[in-house]
Image 1 (cartoon, rainbow, N blue to C red):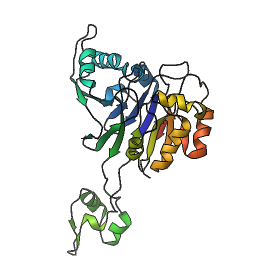
Image 2: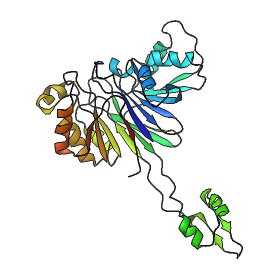
Image 3: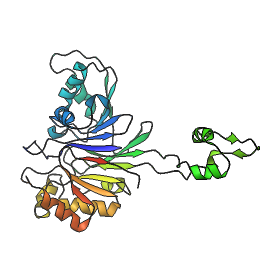
Image 4: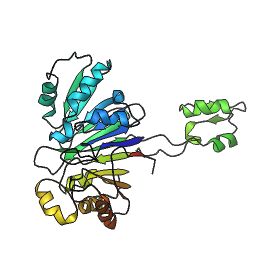
Length: 301
């Protein structure tokens, strides 16, 4: 499970940072969180391919979070994509996608389906779920939690050997089937598998001022990706516009007891975001200021 920050700027791109976009490689597919302008080019600079994107989750419809969609969709078609693309977001996702599909002259080669989500909704998407709450922003905006479903426990080869199982029995047991040994002993998967393991979880706030619902959504998550537009001296004005400071992002991480915090969506006034990272670490030590093309392997806690 690999997380790649494709864009970490706030409001508009800068020389150092692209507009908001984060790619999450779930092994079988890539999930895209927001799609600011220039996202398709960032993919070419990253270890991921936009052709593997199956689902896109848009937090809200300010331009720096969705204006990369028209170019990305048309480039997918030019590269002969045939697989469906699913786009999730607030209620405006339906008319927005309908408008995007009418832009310019191009041949549509694959279906693009919008899925409106509302605060409190939850999508079951096979190996993982996506839950949404309302973010604290002037326009309809969502924060998302992506969570793997519970995984089977690890196979205990030493325990299997001690019970008399041979190598050929291992695959049968790992498939969830019992094995009957030559001496008549019946070995079941439960006898050689560890306890179930919780799936990994990532929470992405999009743009938000401090919000209790976002903290609840992030409770015990492995990773919280929280906007940190400014430092604390400017947080009053930032909050009025629906944004947070680095200090407030760290406070949310601490309250939610997350594993790690990644800061993003930095104001263009900060070509160097080290002060924001330092400010966050005063409250939550495991804070990192993300940068474009930063890749993070998400391991089981």
